[in-house]
Image 1: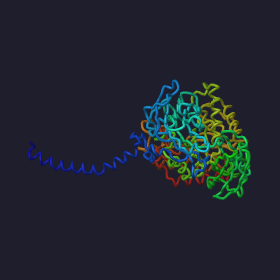
Image 2 (image 1 turned 90 degrees about the horizontal axis):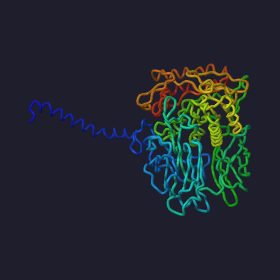
Image 3 (image 1 turned 45 degrees about the horizontal axis):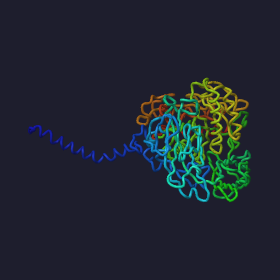
Length: 627
């Protein structure tokens, strides 16, 4: 029994405790909601959540049509079956063929790489198997149609089976592939799709970009397995596999090129071009051969006015037809002497390409943006800050990323994903041949994208086995795509296999903090391929358990802002006289151990004053465009 004194002390304390419990009951739902914002569909907590993390679920994993430049029959009304969502999953030892007709023990959310929290796995495996049972709609096989299975990208090697029959084998973690699965389908009931994947990451000499099995410093978490959308679509026996529109140098016509799947015998392609819904040109001719599509009253594409033509393509062969829609912008990019110096010209006019380095990493999806709105976010914010270019850094993005760049209006330097760095002298002839093959595949896949104005085969010599190799790759790319610039090597002054290959269209140096101001030479324009990198970590918005890799630390947001403005002012004031045609600031967002972004890695905090950044950027672009 308590004494009166004890009771006198206890009762007020008891009342206070009851009051605190009542308050807790009121605020607990808010606390849970805040916690849920950082958790994913299976309850796992994201190491660092973005504003879109909690929006992802098994029922809405990237539901948008994934191939805007070849939509069948149209982008507004595509006929397709999205296979993103929960698949069965198992890590394996990679020995022997996968088993069929048996459920796998785990689940994975496709198309998020297995190392990501959004996948639900959050663990790397060199070998893995995916399995899903699919009911193919009866309409997909009606009237003699075939069924095509499409993969945006799978890292690294994928073998695909339908009902135990191998239908595709693909090597290369950055390129799309398809399989006609019609002959493997059963007459009725669910169809079993099994995908066996080998993902060695940097364990072998293949394109990996910045992925590492042991992330550190400027190298990041691996992204393995299916990491872009998977879908089914009904197609005719002969159909369009690709449809590209290359602007003529006269800027009044497109060269239409097409690739077919199936027999091309007697196949005819008819294309109509539309501007704001009105027909402005059409052409017909043999499918698979270049066609000249003249455009009435051409409207040019630029970052200031990213106008896009839409196209309706019809492939006919006998009584079969394949209807698709596409789009492209009318623009040219090149090098021309202006004021006695070689400069980059867009649509014939000198243009300063002021860009950011864009790594394309996400704390919740690693290589895969959580949603389409998130995918668009970095591009839109880059434009909002007054930049007119992006350097897509040693990564290839899903088709919808380029769709947004095309529509929003950013010029894109497209890097090739690098081989693992640090052992260029140990690359075999097979490694080199594999890289060349992958470069060709990437150029062929992306050469219809209006926003891409230049290719960069090597960055700082990573995976570059000789100085001459950069020149050879530049020639290889130029032969594949003479309509764009080629920057043979970004960062000729750094870091592996140093040296100027004296090839391509650009001289490119890296200078931290910089900026570097390289002069053009007799055949090439010049640019600073990387500079800046001012570092500011924001507590609560950084990747956990990762040491910071500072390029040049600043104490607060004001210092970061002042530093950016001062850095860019050098380009504004000194660049035009020297003849510098472009620059790339590191970088648009923080990434893991790098805290040098204009945004935090979770995209929640803009670290600079947007108005001041835009003002200096606008002034720099104006100065560079009026040398």
